[in-house]
Image (cartoon, rainbow, N blue to C red; front, side, top):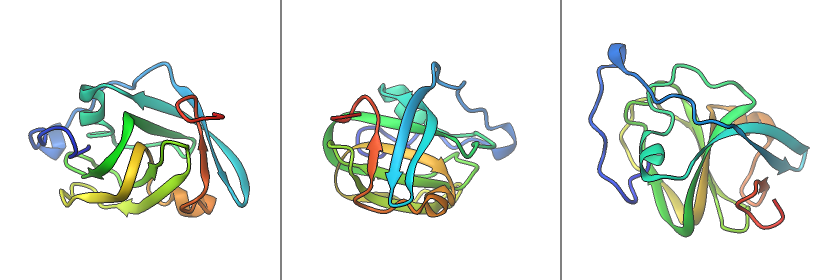
Length: 150
C-alpha cells in the first residue's frame, strides 16, 4: 500500500484477488475528534510485508475496524490502491499522534500516489466515508500505544 519503501506488488485479477489473513491480535485504537472519542480495533502492520499487502483484496471493512501502518519514524509517505477492492479513508498521522492529513474515499484499484503532504510516522486506513462520519479532521488525535500518551 505504501510507495515510500517498496516496489508495487503485482496486479491481481479482481475475481481471483486473495488478501492476506487478518493480522491478529487486533489492537485497540481511538480517534478523538471535536465530537468525542471513538474506539476501533485495528490490525497492526509493522513489517515491510504486512505494510505492502495492507488491505489489498479485502471485500469489506467493518465501521469499527481498520489497519494501522507503523513506519517507526517520520517521513513523507504516499499510498496507492493497487489490488484494493473497497474505498478507504487514508489518515496520515504525525509521530505525536496528531492527524496530519486525510485522503477521503480513495478509489478502489487506483494506482495514483496519494501523498501525506508532510512528515508522517503512521497511517490509519478506515472504511471509505468513515472519517467524514466521525468528523475527523487534521489536528485531531489518534491514541494508540505507538504514540505518546496513547
